[in-house]
Amino acid sequence: MARLDAEMLDQILTTLREYAEKNIPPSKLLEIELGHDFPEKVMKDIYDPGQIGLHLLTIPEEFGGLGGGAYDIYRVSEAMASIDLGIATGVLATFLGTDPINVGATPEQKAAWLGDLAEHGHFYAYGATEPQAGSDLGALSTTAVPVEEGGRVVGYRISGRKQWISNGGVADRYTILANAPGGPSWFLVEKGAEGFTTGKPEDKHGIRASNTAALFLENVYVPADRLIGLAEGKGLAQAQAVFGYTRLMVAAFGLGAGWEALRRAVRYSQERVQGGGPLSQKQGYTHKLLVPNAVRLEAARAYIEWVAERLDAGEDDLATEGAVAKYLATEAGNKAAEDAIQALGGYGYTREYMVEKIKRDVRITTIYEGTSEIMEWTIARDRWQLHLKSRGQYYVDWAARAEKRQAQSPNVGAGLAAMALRSIGALLERARLDRLTRNQHVLFRLGELIAYAETAALFAERAAAAPTTASGLEETTLAAMARVHAREACLKVATEGLRWAVGAGQTDPALKEQLHLDAAVAAQAGLVEDMDAIARDLVRAFPAK
Ligand SMILES: Cc1cc2nc3c(=O)[nH]c(=O)nc-3n(C[C@H](O)[C@H](O)[C@H](O)COP(=O)(O)OP(=O)(O)OC[C@H]3O[C@@H](n4cnc5c(N)ncnc54)[C@H](O)[C@@H]3O)c2cc1C
Image (cartoon, rainbow, N blue to C red; front, side, top):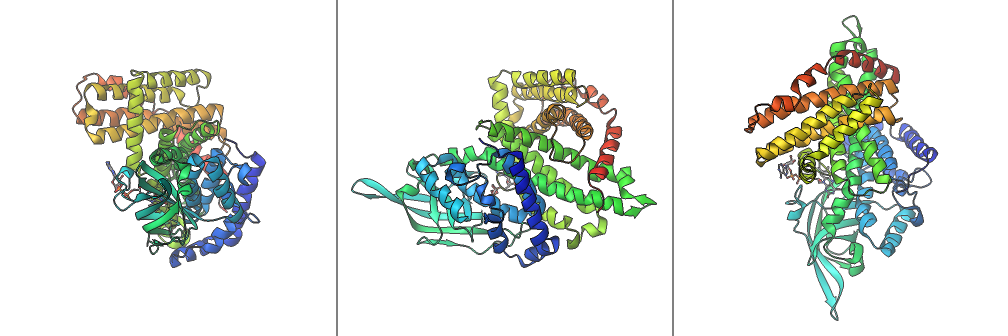
């Protein structure tokens, strides 16, 4: 997949930032969310090619778009989320709504629908979830009954209800997942179609600038050429195929919102004097409320960038990697925002300082596009398969690659990441032999530990070979962060791996050694010094205004 040139991407990010500074300062965002209004003018400006034209980002150039790739989507999603996650969700809904078209439509359908979108900047909505079909989309009950004329299918009548649909009450076009005789299939439905109505906006905990509504379809007729891809039964595969992208987008939302809260806390800590000095110089504050969040967010960024580059290189089967990225980035974003409230004390608990709003907003990222628990399950299930298929070699091989990196770059924690990966391999094997994953909780915990071990390896690799330019931090800081994250990963795999394996009745008396517990404890040497360095660079990178 193509990628924008760096100059073009920078221009989009700058335009977005300048637009936000001028038109939606924090006071305006608070006003929008208090009124729970859908900011139609802002959304129209964002879609207006004369101003930003953001909907063009994912449309291929041949259909009048910019032809941006996954890396561009990640950067723009992060930037949008750092402005306002509700508005970002409205834009995401259009990307999401057109994804079934991007992955499944015929060339003629793409030309017609994406060309139309490029020209008119319609709002799209993506209608998958139903009242009884959330995490389990297989429980879908919306139906698409074929209408035949002269023995030929000329159209479908769609009936059912969709729940929690972003842009649900304001979209012009809807992609709707429904059961046709050949299986779940995506259809394009237009606003105003007979029998199609939408519910009132949901009164939500956060992202109150986004419109979320139920959809009601009663015998809604769509011509047969609105069946995406013109073949029934491909809907779930198409939904699966878009996950690599959409989970990456939501991962970038967690990153953007989490970093925005954290930047606010870092700046505040330099101005707020307590106990005879600024909070930014108090280790008990920085090493609890700031540094661990910066580390987790940057570990997630390293993984996001890796997934984005692979998608842009043409790989399309990255749903598991998308799940790791989404899981860690959104959990990290949520925790960063929670800690930012604490870091601002009483001020953090008031609306004016914005971190309270960010916390409520970012909460959704661990729920939509697959909950954190579903991510844990997806990661564990898919990597379990790889472990079995490779006869236990998958993480052994990955650990060997990390050890090679350690030999070349001894400063990024790659050796500790290798230890975490080896321990994961040993844990999966023990789980196989003792049938531990018959306990669902053990399987889900494995998902979490795998995510930590894999991000540790990726963070180390990228801190050495491809340090990000997107975070504003020094390369030496990224290396220190990679070390801190790798320390956490190897200790977490050892202690929590042991906890749940023993808790579920594992039988190996030497499992502690297999999970390198003593070495993982010894690896904590130097941790506080690294955290000191990270705290200093946060202050340098995000000075008080
Ligand atoms: C603001 C908002 C916007 C949204 N936008 C859209 C949209 O545009 N389009 C769309 O199609 N959907 C959208 N959704 C729906 C969203 O994707 C779902 O809410 C989400 O997938 C979870 O489904 P659910 O709400 O039915 O929860 P459930 O699936 O009922 O989950 C409830 C809890 O149970 C856990 N759980 C579920 N299954 C299992 C299991 N097998 N084992 C263990 N634990 C489990 C979950 O992790 C969660 O903690 C949106 C939701 C919200 C709130």
